[in-house]
Length: 185
Image 1 (cartoon, rainbow, N blue to C red):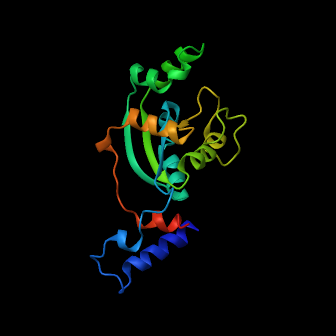
Image 2 (cartoon, rainbow, N blue to C red):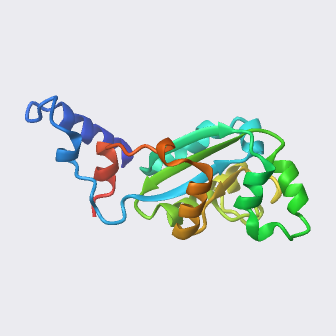
Image 3 (cartoon, rainbow, N blue to C red):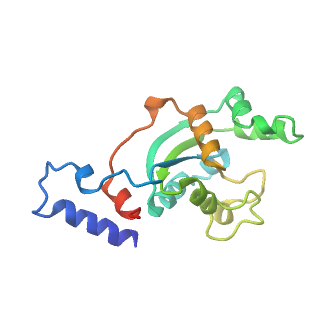
């Protein structure tokens, strides 16, 4: 379990066998294949308004993902038109823009093994009526037009979205001993 992993890592890091100055990267190398896949997760205005940001973050942390980028912003129509470029011609697009600009959005980049596919499963289906209990949308969403969260749909899509929402220096590369222990392959 996550709690056992945390205790194990704390015990290893605190043991007398490891110097306080031993880099964590020596203890837990971060070069495992696929561990550094990144995905974009955005808490939409309804999720922010309903104060669900903390609960959503907690789900990704408990899953073992590492947070490498986080910001809150009022989204511009220009950014939305680039993010939702495949939807600009749809009849519901004006309502989507109105909704997404109605309040702040919290945008995050999470890193971990199979992060895109796993995050999509955690978020649940787009329509909350079809989303399973235990998923973000299944637990918190009310209607398809207010479905609390966005998650990248593919590794290629994630890369594009991350570059759209974050500048390179806004993403942190840091070693987390828990990350590599939970992703041991």
